[in-house]
Length: 411
Picture 1: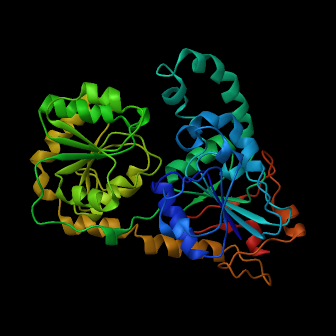
Picture 2: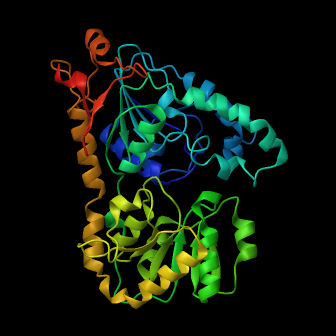
Picture 3: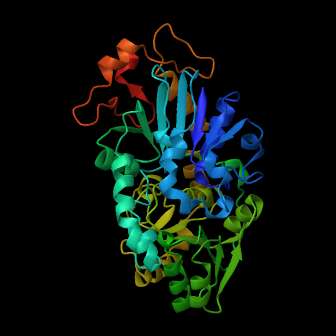
């Protein structure tokens, strides 16, 4: 078995998932476009890591996204001959890795390549330089054409129903859903939170941290922002005296901030959104935009019969964020730390590991075992019979909420 991941430059949500796969399959080598040593957890760092030519390009460690047009060639340069099973964890290029003809490829998809689809304007629109805006349209068109070719993926597993629908819309493929994990053991509620709100996010345009800053300015509420990114200077310039930027913080520091805050502000449309679940594990609610993956993880005040874990707002505007903060403050007593913890526990790492293991086992081909955890490759005859699709020639997977059930698994 081989694992494939886009890049290793920090411990974000995707790397939390990768960490669990590394524990499930401890002998599997890891192929990635780029690895910044020391940037990920010891569980990931200590395995054999194979990088692409992107690793050797100038300033790749910090400027790797500038090499986006080269990613297709880089990921297809990996030699995976000899592996029966390939599991890719992909939000960009990893799913396009070339598997051996007789191998099984399951792609755990964080999203189709967001830079060229839903978030194109955020990355290459008005904020980009004139040269980028001029050159990027034909490059993006070529990348979209390349990204749609998914015949090398036997089955997709999405991180949320939101992403499963995006996969269906862009790739014309069905995807099962296994929600990413939250390590609830890292978090502990405290008896009395402090008087500040919290944002934990990369400082990039689509996170819309500017709305949280603007709402805090308007209401004169204390706001702490954890994160770094290209929007930092602009956000600093817009911030009033009640807003403080903390930059990067360790896992332990972030867990402490979650526990001490009044609530987390979450104004982005996220593919899944691990932050609200981490906050819930620390006993604190989230004030969130009612779009994207958060609809699958949070129980909104006044919109669900379950104990509330969030206040939702419907418009991605400063005014909507400010009104939601006021609404939360008038109903703060209704958010019980025990109920918040219980909701987070439904997405715990152990649940994710069990679902992933079950998903692997459900694709077992009779009589062909795999020591890595229960997946085995389909025969050439089986692959030929099950991988025909009128739109893409790719394997059809039968829909489920937690496990991969491919047609060939029943043959």
